[in-house]
Image 1 (cartoon, rainbow, N blue to C red):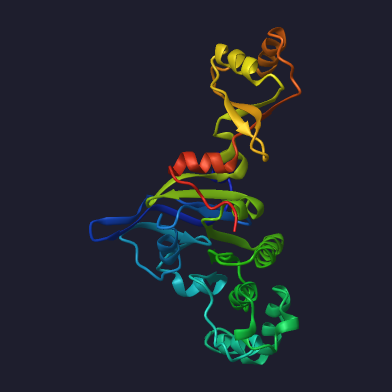
Image 2: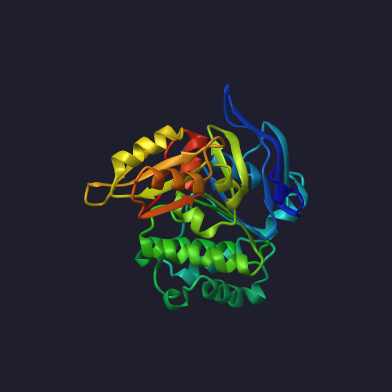
Length: 323
């Protein structure tokens, strides 16, 4: 567990959480730690165990072994007292297509034994306002866009006050506008104090809206922490812009670096990039060696490993980085 997580109150905590299907371990002994008030990205390629983990957290599937704590209470023993404080959107929203958004939420609210009929209309109206759907409240759901349906699903999760919101692939299949709508909503909920747990395989979305991340690979948890911690665990890269790429490559190789030629959008060689290992010279020494060799340096920058590079290194697989 990361030092930044270990010292704070946790909204979700698991120890050795495991789910077996016959001889196959869909989830293999994971220790999750989700800080209260965070937007926590639960990342991994499809089939890595994300949805199975969420189903166990919410009591929709039983764990083979391990411990689960939600909002400070042991699960599944405290399901009845904890779940009313948790909103969830798992495996996509399902609504009656020929009822309006308002009518759908009223029906769903009626099914909640803890929901008061006297305040139902006000709760439904407030939930629609929170997700920006008051303009479409009377429209039949079959006429909703995918983004509107996702927001209506989140509105359902917010009909009652929630301390924790669990969203499984909330931007899956959305166009760019729908994705922006859901991203903005998640940020606003977190700003109001709700802990948001977001499962996704879309790296770019997680990077834009999450404060903390956990990475799954083949049922195991391979990393978790703040975004900065995960980025900082990878190798930094030096990037050189020069009109003398051949001479620059020779200098970098002589310094023990392995330069890679980056191609410009026009298809021509553009820059050189090289990973800065622990044994690499200091950046200022690299620049001094280039200048001493007569290499013209137009630009030289050092950047931490990108989140995409770090995740690919952790999982051995590429992530979808755009819709």
